[in-house]
Amino acid sequence: MKVKHPIPKAKELDNTLSLLGEGFDFLPGRRKELGSDIFETRLLGKKVICMAGEEAAELFYNNEYFKRSGAAPLPLEQTLFGRGAVHGRDGEDHHQQKRMFLSMMTPERLEDAKRMAIQELDAKAEQWQHMDEVVLLDEIEEIFTRSMIHWAGLPMKESEVKQRTWELVTMVDSFGLTEGRYREGMKARNAHEDWLKKIIKQIRKGEYNPPAYTAAYIVAHHRTPNGKLLDLETAAVDLNNAYRPMIATAYFIVFGVMAMHENPVTLGKLQADKNNYSHNFAQEVRRYYPFAPVMAAIAKKDFNWNGVHFKKDMRVILDLYGTNHHPDSWDNPEEFIPERFSTWNGSPFNFVPQGGGDHHTGHRCAGEWMTVMVMQSFFKYFAENLKYSVPEQDLSYDMSRMPTMPKSRLILKDVQKLKNRPDNVFYHEQKNTTVQSGCPFH
Ligand code: HEM
Image (cartoon, rainbow, N blue to C red; front, side, top):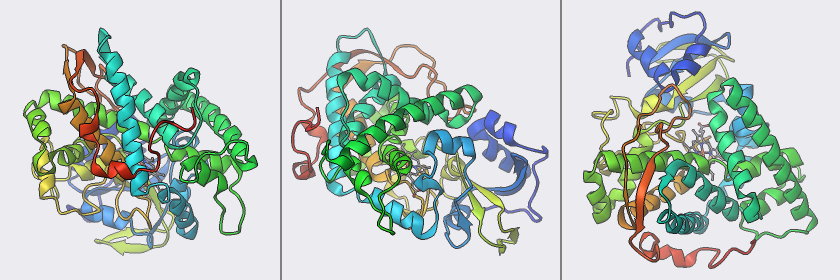
């Protein structure tokens, strides 16, 4: 890790507009320019320390030094995470809330999520065979809306699918914080939370009874340490956070299918799937392609680290994307090489597309295991169960947009299903899932 002393300052007076304008390139660009993995700048008028790399991530995820309450910008709380969300909690309060989320992620329920998503994908693929062209990002977003709302134990009529998909996608797309997307994000969140609040009330009154292992049941009946049910607002935010983030996985699926097209040698390797290749491919997609740019925290106290003085209440930003591309941890970081994950050291701090540190005691993403399992099974499905062509289109992606995606949203043509059933992408554990057949809610 390169640290200059005294730590350099970015030349601009305030870098808020540069961050929003340059997106994923902002922090890596300034680090290069200043020759230091740590530098100082101002965001929203306040002094901020920006940092990247494995050692920086290890510090950032140390609960002794940093807290999250008040760290995320308010507009992000209002659209993406929700007010009072687990993302901005600290200490025992965070642990209690996090335990609730992790209780939804048993191995059986992760298998359920994977199976439900694959079943929706297989049903869509049937339709794709009769379509002139398929806009993959839009299709995968709908697949995850259908499968995750089902997984969460929520009732959704066929006539509602379009509206709910729009709400989830718009909340996720709001995080670049442009004015238009922020306004739409607020609209989407309000509409979705109103829907959830009605269902939570029905569950509490016993008028609607999802199984006890579902997110809907767990959140509706969760009690805080003082024995009270969650207030309705918080319950709606938490329930939303238990499935909405799966929409983020749609971006990675599209990038992965694009990677198969751009690196054709990977297709054969996915079909052979030796030495856990499909898992390593999914990991490399999460490392290589941009989704979550940074996380913010606030120093809890004055301390010195690596010759740098951190002042109490100072805001600190960790470059997640830059850490996944840091040359200290990754050889040829700008090349797409799935095999690198067969010798990866498993550090919780050098590969942080969904946060770093510990899932239970820290803020690392509660949905990370699910994301990897679903990605792996989708890539196997695309490699083994489908034939399609990728017509001429603009597959470039704009690094200044957050979130970003191929400009064409990835168009496929001439889709053909090669297998009648998707059994080849399920695993043996599938027999042990909690929901065996059909959807009990439709
Ligand atoms: C591509 C997929 C995903 C990405 C890129 C992603 C990314 C992230 C990131 C960056 C964080 C914050 C880490 C931090 O605060 O340091 C996070 C937290 C979280 N994620 Fe995800 N996530 C994804 C999928 C999911 C899924 C599928 C779920 C649930 C089904 C989920 C639920 C959560 C929750 C509840 C938290 C808050 C954890 C906490 O504050 O303790 N995420 N995610």
